[in-house]
Image (cartoon, helix red, strand yellow):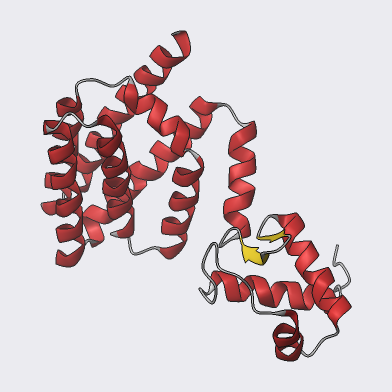
Length: 229
């Protein structure tokens, strides 16, 4: 059935415009929104309308209002907020499977689409993983591991893919740390990364996918170990 079109209220229109500006990078996470008079003039609305729009975005989790500080940006996207809430309510294994499935597709696309600049960034992240592994620095290795995978996702040149992966990874940050801590030694982890890098360098999508499958099984085994422990 064809539904009647819904006319947006002035409050909804202002909320959408603020959300669009945030997603476009007008204001970064943690930055303060301009003062009410400036925003009222910018959107040509009353104080009450502006406050209702901001209240709606605070409720959605995009903005945060604190006494004595004002209204600041809490998240760059409602997508990230929705995913974070979903992840918090989901089974960790299911969420990990989604993340690794994205990495499999990313490895294939990166092998097919990567530029020399992309490859340089992936290699730089790989070297940092190597340094952390040699230095026996688990925490630093975890951070570099995430950066390594994000560099591969970036090489897909698919903006929606990049944003989706970023949101999922950021929401899973604490869980990823726990999983990685039970994976030892770090050298084995680095070797898998090296194989994946080589596959992307050679633009061999099949080998890239097999590399992801290999560490996917290791990640699941580590999660089972963590849950049993």
